Length: 239
Image (tube, rainbow, N blue to C red):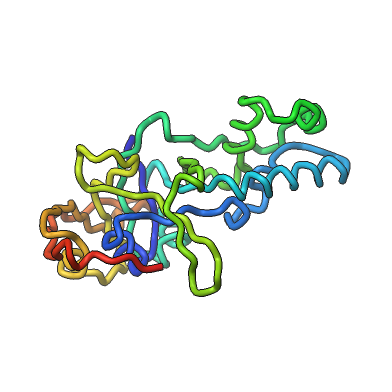
């Protein structure tokens, strides 16, 4: 499945150099209703679900994508006001979780799940994938990541940061296959900026964007290959 990850130019270059993408923690996502889309009326049940959410936050993270790149609001919200880029990935279909946008919260028997010691798989799937209908413009696809299986570094604030590896090689084992980079209409990255963060063996398809003349859409412009110039010995990780 082809998906798009919106990101600032600074962090896009960092992802190219380090060949990895930051995993978002569930409690830090921009929707406070994440994992709390169930309808519960009493505060006791709410507290139990919050406890469960905090437990999941310690074990799992997510990487968020969109099914398309044409909506200008996505570029405004997630790509530094059109100054950033969209990284184009191919991910396995069985890793992709499409978000279900709903106008109302769904019913969930939290107490029964707690008594069983776990949520049913269908309940977990619904908790992971349900968002309020106002988020529909994102057309989000997400991928969950078990944190213990991923590389971790401590940032300057003493906080754990987890990463998913990415590859540019079609034969790689990483679930994130980077197949392209789309520049926002205000992006000032030039081909040499991108080439300097790619290995000499890498070639990445880069695409410019432009405003559609007949709709409120971002559309494709010129597409060209960028060949890397960096030696493998220059590779280093930064947080």
